[in-house]
Length: 578
Ligand code: HC1
Ligand code: SF4
Image 1 (cartoon, rainbow, N blue to C red):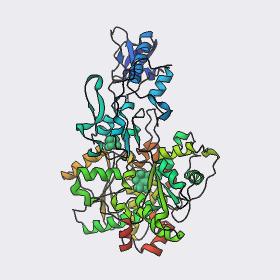
Image 2: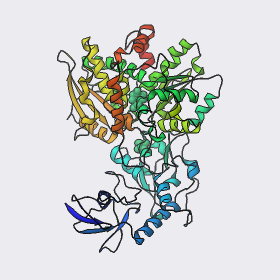
Image 3: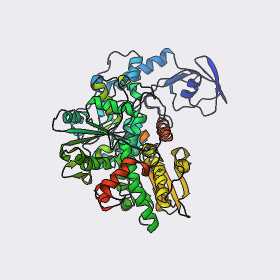
């Protein structure tokens, strides 16, 4: 242990502790802006500077460890003046139009400036002109150079967590700024649209394309029937930025809110998650029985960020993806076919919307393979954050809105369909049903819990092997975060690991930690917490197997025949080559 004093309070902390954390242990919060635990500890913003007795210069507290006898002061006149000047200098290169900023009220720079009582820009504003016009408006990710504070968190998360390396520093001196790496335009980069750089940005420099206007337009068109689906992981997070306690932020209250927003039909993507399992589970058993190593391991295909990653990094492995469309896209396909027939409406008159924890879903619905003559199967994707903005725009108070059921038939789901939103959930749901399809009887629902993300080992992924019955041993791997995924693919390519079935989710923790989820300005990691909410929903669900979803079974009986039938293939599968 190392003995230090913080503002006169003595404290002993383990060796290697940073000054920032030592102060925290002594009950002293040091303001900081660029610091991100374990990821960005570079002292770039200089907001966290403190005075150390015997040192001439102030030192950043986030990346300097304590030493024995260190005397730290965080509240001297010099520290206060320097912190204030550093914030003022950052503001001089920041477009301070808070009223039109998506992060207003949820911005670390705004909070620090307000906390320090900075009421004026004392340094002249030095902004780059014309940059907004250069960013492609149709790209699902939007970046505003003039909001960027050069904290470099986006660079770190895209490099270290996602291994995609989209961002880099360009220019020198006062003209240094963050931009797309290697002088590329964003559309030329490998950006997979995971949105992790958005959720790790402390200010409003990065956001998703705002599609709420298109929704209002469709809603005011009397010819359109509006249909909405809610992704599994949204239910675990939508209440966070509305201040709703978890017991109030239920998916059934979400259904009530969506009806008040004006949707004609409200459904649950978990229904088509169950449908996906029927198709993907059947496909896996076929590939496994055929034993063709060109098709194994089979990769899950529901995460569009992952699909984009695979196609740009290992295009030769595209055929290893399950051909099953994602639940979002299966939902769109069913809505504009069998559901349209059921309600007697032309598919082209249906406006199909999904609420997703994801930015990449905005691109998935635009793929040419996801459309018919009636237009795209899914017309519009809104992130959880955009959904929350709709609630705010309409001044709805969800606490006052009663819980309501979903419309039928696509509102019925199993627990297996809900856990899709957590890392390992797709694999667990698939194995539950693959076991049934292989043996004709159910396993215990918890038999495959070893694939849950909380078992991730040092390699960065979770391995497990199961006997599906009669000695059919299935080797599985579950991975989330694309840097981990890149390492797993490299091991596969080198022949050092062997799997039959691999689940990949681009975002750490799966969709629960998706790039479209609410953003928080504290350091708390929420993906695992949200994942637990989903596993708890599964635990208390009466139906826990996708193959027992009565409405999914009715769809096969009445329309599709068997999983993997010609009709099912045509409606619910794609080769991912678009
Ligand atoms: Fe996901 Fe999926 S789980 S991809 O993370 O397979 O976005 O929640 O909706 O499509 O079901 C996202 C979540 C989501 C699909 C499902
Ligand atoms: Fe990188 Fe994901 Fe951001 Fe694209 S969306 S720049 S891949 S972190």
